[in-house]
Image 1 (cartoon, rainbow, N blue to C red):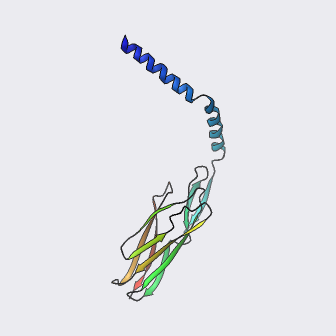
Image 2 (cartoon, rainbow, N blue to C red):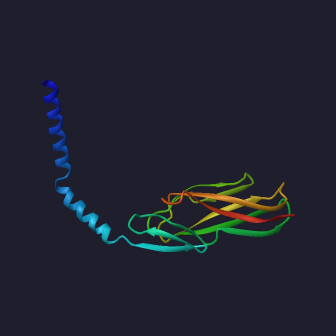
Image 3 (cartoon, one colour):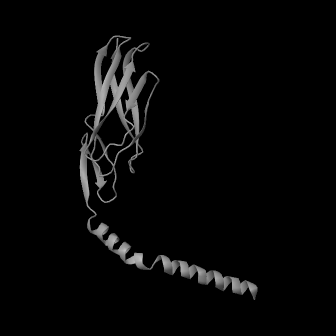
Length: 162
């Protein structure tokens, strides 16, 4: 009998919570949900010839580089190659560069820790120390962002050390 009473008390309490949460705000949430469904458009941004979709209602950032590869040509051993990869936030939410890592310790990326607002531009500065290197070099920098669909974006420095 006591177990049965506890069960009905719990059931009544659960129904009370469900009813209280669904009261006045449900109409407002329903209207907001309809507005989102009515404005669910997609836009396409191109980057390096590849199309990328951006859902305008989710508030997603989108990083679009001017170029993802920089060829520095032929340099002498010991030269420090410097390049700035420029990008734009083509999404509709703030873009955050969470981290940037290089494929080896001879390449050092540097970036702004501040959020890049929609429509604004940013930079990732990279230095590659060619000391101790020779021949064809391909140094990859992996850029980690807060974009929901892409865990990381890669840019690269290429060239030859003589």
